[in-house]
Length: 120
Image (cartoon, rainbow, N blue to C red):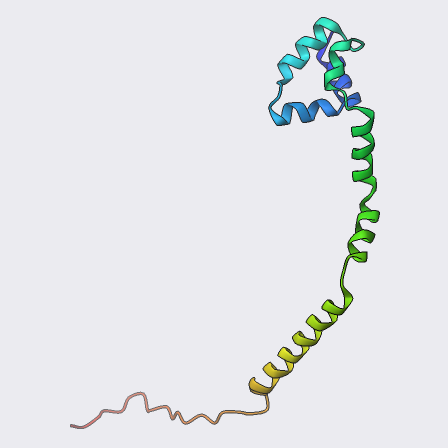
């Protein structure tokens, strides 16, 4: 059995990647099992995702829109409205405190002559 065939086997069974990432096994061990027993052996049963787990994984991947809808259903709109009203009030209060751009400060600074000597 070649490494290329093993790579194709892993592509067919991507759940093997999870076992390696979790540290439950190594690629070397998986390759040795593949080399000894091949693809079609009951040794691989413990590495296969059960149908129930697979459907849960598919639901998690495909259920993003459903999850979003459930999240939106759980939102209390009156609480959101109260929050927005209080934020609006805070912005209005800040506008009342903050200076407007119309006021211009008159400069009191007069530059002194560069080469003037001061007498004691």
